[in-house]
Length: 104
Image (tube, rainbow, N blue to C red; front, side, top):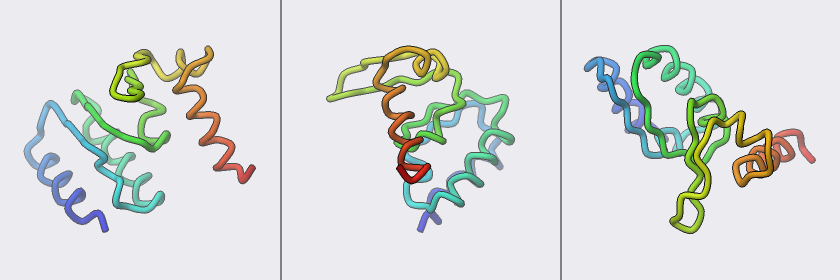
């Protein structure tokens, strides 16, 4: 699972693209592989603009900006840290992820 995503990511790395657009780039991989891919993306594409559609909190938690879409409408757009500081949809998602990750 996830071979196509890895091949596409390898091609982009070789092209030295300035913009990287990913649509659920790690959806077909396990959490451990996702973490490795995210580390590579953050290191190798540090000077690039990255637009990522993602459903996993670790994928977006350290992004510059997050756009939360609910029922097809843009609901929130800000830094993840700001969204977590106040009542927000994103903050609720992060809290739910934290609860599930800790086994609660």
